[in-house]
Image (tube, rainbow, N blue to C red; front, side, top):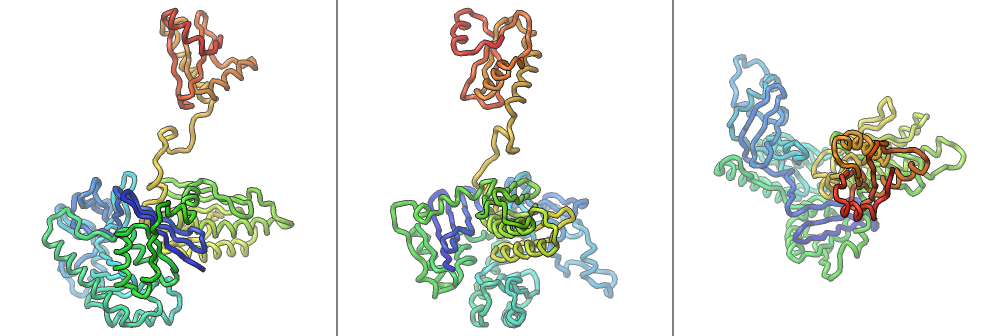
Length: 511
């Protein structure tokens, strides 16, 4: 499989696409004025403590205070004195409330876990992690872990023993997937680098006053080099000379053997257009995604969760209904895993596959989904099928969803995706006429409305279905206005004969 990373950099945004055999499987964008906060480390000040929620709000210098759960707080056991030494300290700490752990006005070092979004501030933790290419340093815990994506148990145990020998005293390490097959000497320089970084962060935290940013996570281009530029990537193409030189320098440090795969795109035309990526991006956020078989999936994102519905569409199968349903569901499972990565959907995801009668078929679809999700670098968890036949899964929130970065709420429908029908507008017009016309001294009225509403009312009139009220002595003239929105109505009384004649030339008398 040929894998390429294409990085389009300009002064307003950075866009990075991962291609597999020419097909885009991952896309990220970062706007200059909308920085990513996940991974940033702050010296914050506890603003409020909420005992009833076992949480606290922490001022970190942003528009909204960050949210800190009690379970995300690392407690220094030396800070507490227990009356009975025989009681296990960890058990006592588990019973502690948020008020025992923090005090209002206290300075605290925290790291952002989740981006702020909507009405919510960032979610933060005191469990600091510093990611490298092969390892993640956890300076506040004494623990060694290995990525679950390294499935070979012998390899997992080998790596765990190696890292345990070389880790800094009192600190923890997580072995990342990129470390598979590495030897002890491959980890030494990275551990030293991360340990030095931690010392610098602690020094800044001691010197600076809260609230203050004391360490920011690397930008998207450098995270790409660290996390995505793996040995199976044949090319890393970038179109900005400054970033090209920086990527070369970074690669020289972490993977010098891969420097020759970095290419500079020195052309005057659009880079993404050249690789056929712009067209693919335009299709990413479409609500309906067609499958090659003729079936389709529908993706609906809400604040609480994302729902994905599977339909047979144009696919009719051959002989057996259950085989037809299974084929569509299996194809949909692979496409859903791909769409989740492309759209960067996170949080709760509910998938409504087409109902399957056989338990065996349900297991095939579920296994297909799980295998397809293994390609996702972001942590996912498939919880299983509910009694209603819905698949529940979650995906860790790391970045803002692509839809939030590139779209805004429709001012017409308020984000619902629906507007009033012509019939509803016509009924509202009838009510407004009854309510307001009799209260004025005007006899003639011109009503401005959207052309589709105008056509609806006039069609009903031609069918002898009168939609405007008949009011003695009052006349109504309908005028279609293309610039009006479907739900907009203007009712104006006509006073002067000269104005009346001009207006009526372009309108249609209803009475």
